[in-house]
Length: 378
Image (cartoon, rainbow, N blue to C red; front, side, top):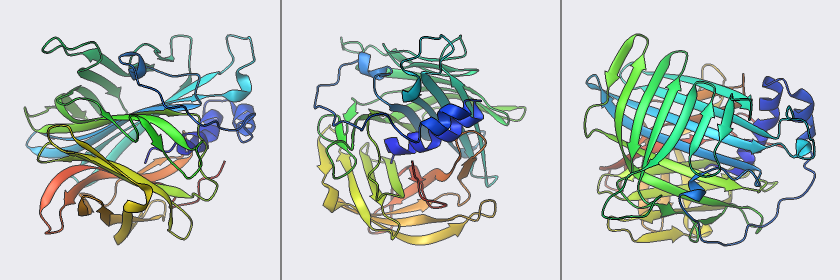
């Protein structure tokens, strides 16, 4: 679950890593409280772009492909955070917006996860996020959206995302093409994240993205096998703070084999009980069912302890929804991302299979687990 609070919690440590330590301390006290977002119709291609008037935003892509005869998972996430304490400064050097990014590749056959990160203040040609469309550049990493025109559709309806990631241990050169309309999460794109009205975000997804391009590991460049890849894109932006009782969250985004798309999440207390939950199912053909907060339940079934951090994560789940009960199974236990060198976060995010109540595979996607090592606190 891509809670806005996650981005703020990581931001103070991110500023420290970027040499902005005083700002990082100042961000622990926000100068004004979060306000409830108004319901509005999202407009594209404008809303593919950045929304710097709100505190936090992210573009999040996960997927799986076959390359060089073996399966791979990948994650690319770009974040934007508004630095409130600098907004009144006139200097061109003031860090008013901070951009950072995470990328990871899961080598299922080799049984390992590779990951990297970037961080910079916006400006000076180093980092930027366009307000007119998805066009994010962070040093030598980028994510750019362009239109795919079909059957006279309007701009912003169909998309191609081009991701270029030059990491220390791997390289991603991917094109991700929409095969379905946008999926507006929540109530027509306004998604509640807690019991208070101010805990909400604008949120849409693009499931069932077709993937092409290449993955390079070391010196080996591997082309994505045609027709094997599927990816998921989330874009979310908000002014919201996390509910004070929440210590972390669990989230899944699953591309279903029949062409459907399943989202489910919960935000949890220290005792494991849910403060809030939600999600949706879009069936082939476009009908969307939005889940109420009291209709989604996450129950852990198997745990794994990271030998690196000592954190214990539930890597197998039973997830109950209004449309059925599913099992989520990690395809590799060790998919922990240690980003303490840039964002301060250690969390689990990895490729999983989705099984129905009969134990049959019905989908594949990503599971995100946060707040298991320590509570998230502002």
